[in-house]
Length: 91
Image 1 (cartoon, rainbow, N blue to C red):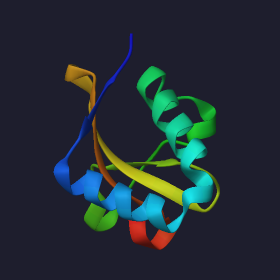
Image 2 (cartoon, one colour):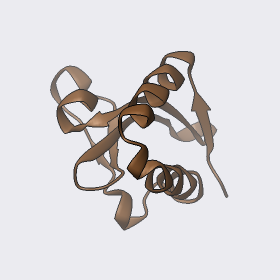
Image 3 (cartoon, rainbow, N blue to C red):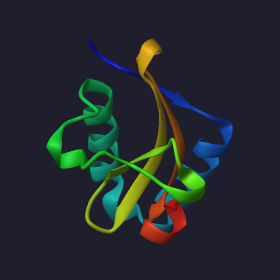
Image 4 (cartoon, rainbow, N blue to C red):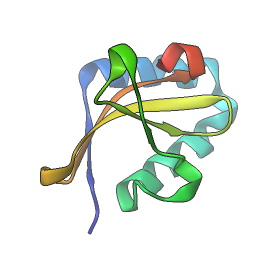
């Protein structure tokens, strides 16, 4: 079963800006999203829940430096992409 990724307008703007600043990781970013769609619990994504003001959201890793924050709606098998950036930007 695959998950449906939901790209919000806000996320698309952030992702475009992020990829413009970091074109060298575009293929890694695309691979991360493909893997997320197939299996959000794949070990290389390092999926984990967030706390504090981001309680209820999750984070996945593009690589050791860059992250994507997501909201997972488990009953619908949907993943809403919220933000992308380095550790401080994404959180």
